[in-house]
Amino acid sequence: MIHKALMALSLLSVLSGCGLTSSQAVYDEIRAQERAKAVGTSVPPGTGLPRYDQYQKERSQLAPESR
Image (spheres, rainbow, N blue to C red):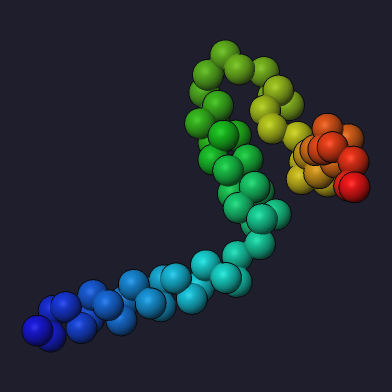
């Protein structure tokens, strides 16, 4: 019984923390992980994901116009 209560409490705390994470923070973390994976490989630097502002600019150009 106590185990289920602790599990539910931890799940709620994790889910409440998700609301504090911005899409930019998630994107930057993915970008950092991709750069870390490329260390020591033959992948040239700078060929990974673009900076978040560049990503948003390209994404807004591809998005259909608002009606």
